[in-house]
Amino acid sequence: MDKHTPKPRGLNAVRFYLALWCAKLSVPLLRITRHNGTNFPGELALKLCPDFLKFVARPETIVTVTGTDGKTSVTNLICDMLEGAGRSVLSNRLGSNINSGIATCLITGCTALNRPRFSMAVLEVDERSSRRIYPYVTPDLTVITNLFRDSIMRNAHPEYIAGFLTDSMPPETKLLLNGDDLISSGVAPGNPRAYFGLERMDSDVTECVNRINDLRVCPKCAGKLRYEFVRYHHIGRAFCPDCGFRSPDCDYAGGDVDLKAMTMTVRDAGGEGTYKLLSDSVFNIYNELTAIAVLRELGFAHAAVMKLTEGLHIAESRYRADKAGSVEVVMHLSKDRNALACSRVFDYISSCPGEKELILMMNNLNDEMNWSENTCWLYDCDFEFLNDPSITHIVTTGPRARDYRLRLLLAGVPAERIDCVREELAGVDRLRLAPGSHIYILYGTDSMNMKLAAQVREATIKKAEEAVK
Image (tube, rainbow, N blue to C red):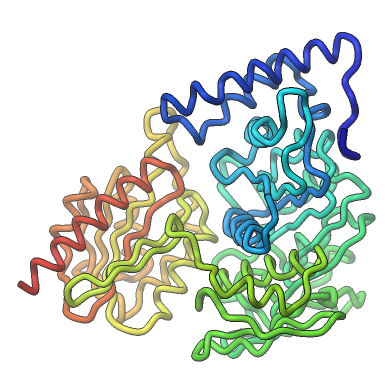
């Protein structure tokens, strides 16, 4: 039994092994029915043994990744680099990030006699599920990418979520925190910690221009915060002129970001390395910096990490670009119900060179039959970024097509630039496909939306290729 796992005894042992074996038997059945990504084994195990996570075997080294945005991308980058270094890594890439998903992952990672099959685990953990996971699973390192305002129906305010994490975090777990985010960097103040952050960039400003700014006052004295620079929303370097509170110094500092050469230098106490950027999106630069910091925390030298980043790329489920005829077709994840994530995508697209057309299809399709979405997040989101001359045409689609159209009009987008179509695939017929333009298909996080976005992408490529014949 590894250092993390207490041994079940007496009736607890009977209940635990019954849960483990039943859950393991369900795994091949799910594969036969092509339900590989389901968290059913974990749900079954937790139903049979509510404290299952306390006793299930786990790897010797555990890294967990949480935060409002970026946790899936960061988890995948860490796993890709570790596997590139020859490590056998257990991760919940195909499952969910709540307690049943973590249980499912650990079930697949242990033997029938409850022995761990992997030496290391990198687990994505949902912020709200932390209080159901961390009382049983003690990570060696927990990464918090950031804490922002998320779905108002689910995560309320980021300080509320920060409280969840602070209350549930094991005191011996080391934290790797975003030093440019004063909300997440304040989680569990008694824990050992290190910080990562990006040095000042040419695009930074001194006043927030976004509709959302979740940190306006000092968390120590309630005085008004001032910013040395703001990157977006409350991300930047802040200080309080009243009490002296300020953003922490970063142990892993990304600087000299060169978007032409696509490189970044990461400096820490052990030296520095120049890394290839995987994307020109600031959000993805943070994701890459976070993954690099994790590898450095795990003892990898800069030279080794630099080599491991050479073959990395952003997952196609998040971003994919294809040349079709005379245009470029881009599938870009844009989290529905998440005002900040969509704002970041809109800002990025508006800053990209060239003429652009957009198809908006972030429509919560998995939930359409079960509940009514609260649309107030649309008015926290910076649709104003889409009121840009380079964005010549926007097609709104799906159940929220009219809501998106109304929000675009309120953002000042001229009505003649907007088409409103109920059926997503019918939106392809409205595209103008100007030669040399970029077509962005913006889709949400659920599986139905992703599959439909792939169909829209294929139809767009076909239409673009036929246009040049």
